[in-house]
Length: 355
Image 1 (spheres, rainbow, N blue to C red):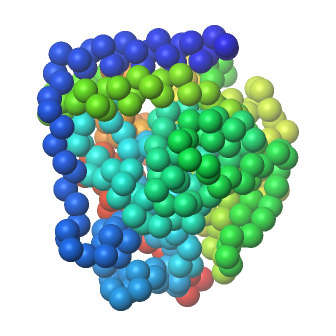
Image 2: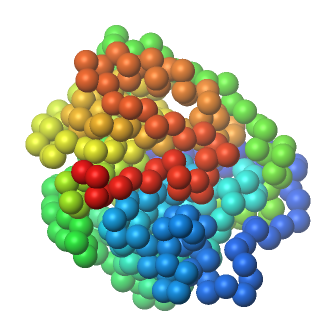
């Protein structure tokens, strides 16, 4: 067992212990119309009723729509194809703050679940959603093996064994690149350290249930299993998503070379919270932006998903905007703020016909 895995268990266990004192009975998450077709209802909620056919549930094929449900997890519709990027509804330190559930995510009828890495805050609901929906899990061989072992039923999986690979999903070209998880490194001097005070408001306002605490405890030790960055291209639109930002300059400069060779991103969704922020601020974030060359940058992994060690998105925003503005070709920053921007598809809806 790696020392890193042990450190994650330690801080998650401490966080869960801090929440025990405020456990409350479970309350159901608000759902869409009870008599509606569940897939149509879920898709209208996540992607906007105006973009979903009320008879068939089909999503507008001329749009790219993403709906954030915490950390780096997004329900995604690209040219009519529906899938998930990561799969965890944040809970355990709190309950019923993120307005959805694994059952509702399964009702979206996603074709695939793309796993960036296997830690609980990215993949803890993947087996349940895949079992209920029949979605195919895409990830490293390690991700697929661990999730298959967790499942009570057989899962469909698409393991990726190469450091860089490309395949098609409907009319979408998918590229996957193995990169690095965040890690603490010696100061490089480019960015000042970024240390934010913890905010326990979610735990106070949305006390955790025993069920959610147990779910967190059950998955606290889930292994990373490698980290993958994904790029999706259709009709000249390029979406790049990565759920961690590693110290590539010091540990894997060849990966930066690979990222520079990819098509420039129309939209990049990238993790900005990580261990290296404590010594190098948002330096790793900037390295990914420089390499991927996005027109729009959307931060993720910056919400208050584990109150003792995380902070609200608003706390990151000033430093993020300042850092991105320092780049020679700075992209537009499309900020997502918790909890108000969970399940707000209007913030990340893009038109393929105007490109």
